[in-house]
Image (tube, rainbow, N blue to C red; front, top):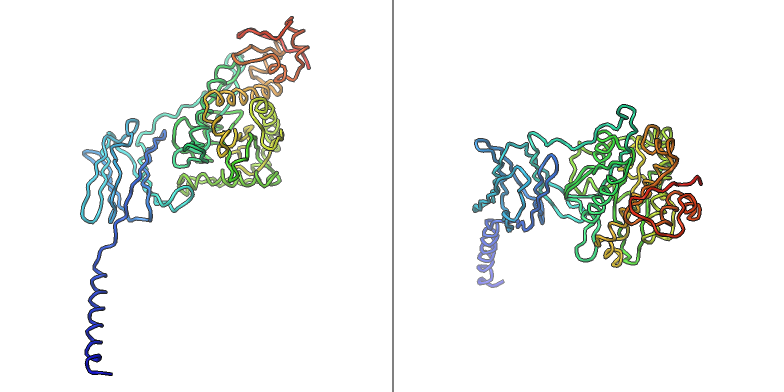
Length: 447
């Protein structure tokens, strides 16, 4: 080897080492946060930072004045925090400070809170998330119904808990035009509540009434323990990879495994809602399914759930297609239905992934039809299985079966709901044609 080549090698090695040293001193690229969301729940406010990768963070709670400080090292915040709606929360203002090596987010508060953070791993449809929860120091009183006991011999109302599926960080399935399941089912749930509350002998309570998430076990507790619900209805909208899939369906809890592969898949997806929403470990449900099923069989609530489901399906089949054309209630291990003291069903109102059904689910008029059909199925169940001491039992005892006509009713629909013929209904009420009047009370003949 020539002397010039021998002299060149040390120089090349030195240049390489120098270049590597320079690279080692180059700071890592900052993580950019370009999406932040805020959800207000009855007892806390949740702020969610969407992340492309995990980040370090620190949290401080300060007083005089009350504020919470979140430091995000090596992070840039490319989001206008002033666009978040804080009007119904303890947050007075949000300030962002940008420093050379970190971003500082300061939440100025109207009142003290208990802060907590949680770094969530990716789970569809989300990537990494940093969750900041601000728990109210003095939680707002939860709206509950008085225990439905007969006062001074008066018959009690039947309580229906309406559970709008998903919510908050769990959007559920999505459809064309950014249609989200959590929004659609909340709209249907509110319409259903209005219809039930307008009916004699029934009262509804909402498990969630806004865009926030309620853990699955908490949904059952709110329904039964807080509001003494007799019936629990969880409302959802289906989705599938094949956009041709269509039709509504109703599910109950299973004691022998899922009745179909689809039922098993839907239960799996529904049961993962807590993970999607970012529920803390201690909030997860650990009740024993076998003991729940045994209690349900003893109380008869499983058989009653199947019967209620059939009544709802029969009504829904009059206004929308049923999945597979089947009018049978399917079963699977849905965690949200694991309450032995309630008659519980899960209603899939249609396929949000189907273009035609998504258009219907977006329509307020169709949502109202769905609400009316669910309410009609619940009413039929209460009339055919009147609970002792209830308004429905009193009606049957005192007057036989009667029905007060409401907007949207038809003679054929009333006959079908009470499982009598139109001819016998006309004869019992001296009706010669199909014309009926809202507010009119019909006598329901014995079937």
